[in-house]
Length: 271
Image (cartoon, rainbow, N blue to C red; front, top):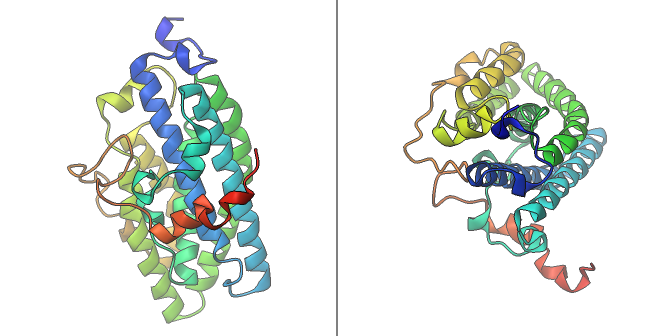
């Protein structure tokens, strides 16, 4: 096995190019998981029925746990994990742009559940055989816990879409707003992406990830006649920062990040 394909137990065993790309990907996933957990958590009391609120609480807890697992990995890359979790501004977050604003309705939350959560799960699946061992060892736990999230999102999507014209249109509108952002989030087939793919640190990049996403999401879209939501499968990357997977100058809303940092309760933080 060549040096480039040798399994790495520490970040220091990766090349500088690989180390930077893997570090960036872990932070993107950790921030996205954290924001997703907040979006679920904020609907615990606003869901249309008690069981749905309980499900939101459970999914929020899963996502926060996944985020903490990922942030902890970054210590091996020389990062201050406490500062990452509690010290950054909204502008420093690398979460997927589809989570920047609080979902304004239950259909919007369900679209996040069904389509944004799916994108993150697919990205983890692409890391399931990663040659970076610390990441690979954590991925399976994440994937297993996501099965419930997928089932919840699919069930509610179908339920809302079947509730009548108003629900059907609300669901289609919410999905149409999210899917172009998600397809772009997977990034381009760049030299940077191919470097970690060729080293077996990830098993797909850019266009392959979009194809997997479209295939997995197709069944959900058929149920509501929303296949057109996919739009252009080769997005415009002219204003895309590959390291952050975001449009430069954009960020989550500051109120949510203030909640995440726990500004009002900092004095109660314990080591």
